[in-house]
Length: 155
Image (cartoon, rainbow, N blue to C red; front, side, top):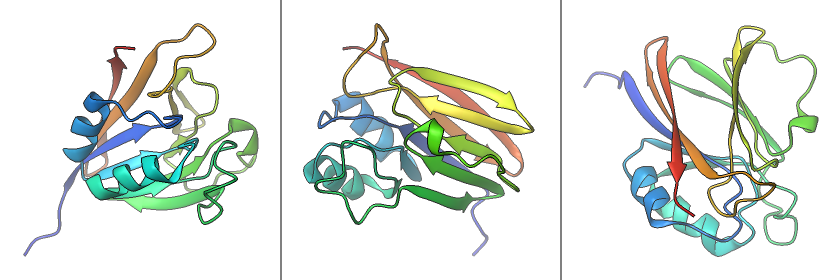
């Protein structure tokens, strides 16, 4: 059997106890689900965990139920290295060997290439705040190539 060469990755954050049908459908069709914190409860975490390979960090609203979740994570999918944390202020100044930096907390979508890496906040897919819309991201990885798509969600 050959090693898999292409991955679909759902990138979400700030669900705050709301797991919308379009988010569930898209996440279930992915190889990995990345959640940058603020599930708000165990049930939301459990539902996502049942959909596929869930890689998650603890957000500031997860402290009462999610003590088992790490505050930050480093991991690899295919040939890409990831660093994930809930609050961008908790990202270390030096991130050696990282291709993607995933974070949440602000509820606002953000994507920018800086210092040779992609900085991505998928926005909130649970509750819109601060005048923002609901969103998530879909990442497709193949070898050292990737495509990144912002997914707008209805509120």
